[in-house]
Image (cartoon, rainbow, N blue to C red; front, side, top):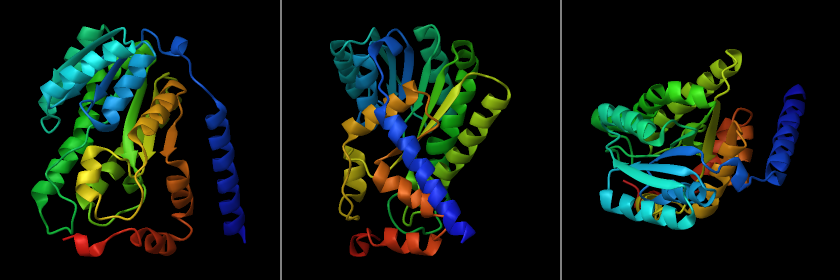
Length: 291
């Protein structure tokens, strides 16, 4: 009985928090002139986040591996109203490259107000774990350690500006998902590191915010290519996802769940009915298309 009451309280609190967040709005005055570094911004969610900050009048620094696409995104950012738009080519599988792009980005921007860590990669594929340690190491380098490297490098600038760190996580960082073991490991690690860091900032009265975006299946080109025929769930629009991420960042919201109704109920019920939640989520996989 006590457990059920606790669960109901959690649901009510979660729904109330979502309602108040949903009714809040942001304006260009809150963002205009802010300095924003967005990783993985040549395509997908990162590209859309860059456009949203551009529309609000921010200075944007883009980074990814593909120069041609970065050039195109930078031009569009200027057309959307960015105060400035620059880019740097980087490989987040190389921690030295991650450090350099953070250092040079901060130098070029003259400081930093928002560090948006969105990039994803690694050599692992969507499928059963076959004991490939290279895939595990590669995924953790790109999806975890490079995030920490960039945060470490940017920490001084963010403290000076009382800025914000925005981290892309996933339902796979809250509930273990089959066929993505290496990716799950990195996302679980991210959740632990940044929830810990957020508490440190609060206890040390350092006014730097940490927003963790817990995302579901989004209709990016990469996600559709990798898992489009392997799951039955519908993909949510990347444009709306980016809008919600930027809103949460500006409002300094600790956590964002998107799509809310596709993510939050599973997270709330995870500890109370783990077997049931696992069985429900397993129904979304098309096993004959997965090796």
